[in-house]
Image (cartoon, rainbow, N blue to C red; front, side):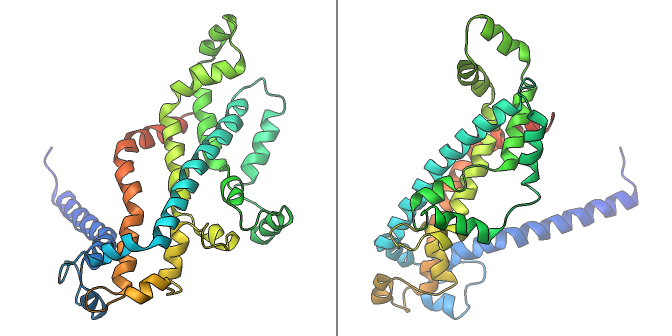
Amino acid sequence: MKQTRGEKAFSILNHICLTMLSFATLYPFLYVLSASISSGHAVITGTVILWPVDFTLEAYVQVFKEDAIWLAYANTIFYTVAGTVINVFFTVIGAYPLSKKRLMGREAIGFFIAFTMLFNAGMIPFYLNLREMGLLDTRIAILFAFAITTFNVIILRSFFQSIPEEIEEAAKVDGASDFRVLWNIVLPLSKPSLAAISLFYAVARWNGYFWAMIILQDERKIPLQVLLNKLVVEMKPTAEMIGAMDAGVYSQETVIYATIVVSVIPIVAVYPFIQKYFVKGVMIGSVKG
């Protein structure tokens, strides 16, 4: 169908706005990447704008030499993998019973769970609870204090509700228990939604730094994001970095940019393979609620 003059003008304006928005979104990533492979002098003097200047990989060499960065990287991987497994486990065992009409008090329980999305006790009571339980400066606090998210419970509950009850009834006629039905039937059918909430949890775990910064005091337990906060915000380089820094080749800024690039590689590498499950899982989970 032929477009009118107004529709053509609107389409052109849309393309211009979206192009500008795309550039504004991508530019910080391009700048960080370019700065990480430029010389320290070029970054400090503001010569780097879009493309690398005086190409060098010395910043990455310095990053790979840092024991503190590798330890923080290992901590982040541990918190992400173990934390995501814990998150998904608690979400499943919370969402599955709520999806069953035979659960007594299901509506009341669902109301109180959803209520936490709007109101909560706040940061100070939460911190005091952790302190009273002796969980400050422990890995257990990072793993279990954030073991579930209400939004993900609702998504998974909605998906479980969309599975025909006849499938589960047929399995129970054959003698399957509720646990066996969940493990052998419901979970295999729920791979898209499980992949979606796993991605939600994994990204949140990988990027989380605020509570880790408050709870953890031992430098050997902090994740990579807390270390980045010390480098970027507090401008506190490690002792090895101070001793080895050479502003003519690399600087603290280039090392920071290189660390940022290294920290986002796992998420960027994994996301394309689970993107289809991410979109499909969220859409399916929103059909019925």
